[in-house]
Image (cartoon, rainbow, N blue to C red):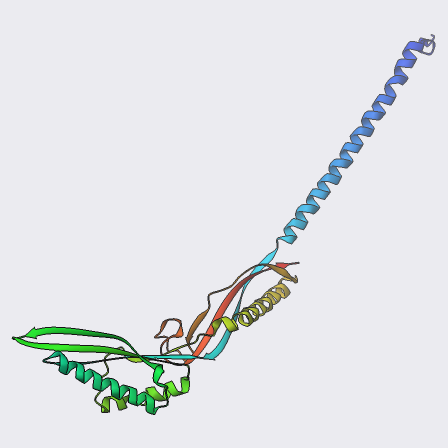
Length: 252
């Protein structure tokens, strides 16, 4: 038997013509596969890097500072009643002179004490008219020690015949907050970073840059726990300023 395929040029040529086509297809498939593998690696590596870049820890930092009030204000309210307006007013005028003399003897300048309001009321009881004159004087001073001395001696006003009404008392205010704000915020931020570094140490990472930060609310309270006044206004002249900041740090 004779193998006719060797004598058939068309069949022989057709067989060998299909082999290059198969090789090209296999080569293209390999390139696509390599591209998919590389793309998948780059995508996965990119996602991993993105996750690492987004790792952060949120901590709070505290800063506190003891300060002394730099403004003292004392609103003194007093009144007098009489059967006629002139007599009531005369009694109030006498009390005003006694009050000015009291603060003058303590060394306050005359302009430290100013009248801030007056009120006149009249009522009738069993056909008898009574007039009441009520007046307010306000002391304003930056001399805190002198103000404290006035508070200690305020009963002398009573001995002089001046009857102080409820609500009369010295108030102390710290007005220098803006001067210490930057340093306190920096201190609170350092405290926050220390907390973040401890967290990073425990988790086997390190602390990076600040991702975001929020300045907390500044509070001013009496240093020794007398919180009778808002923003540290009333009570003791010795205050405690406090701020808490919230900081997000990147972890790497």
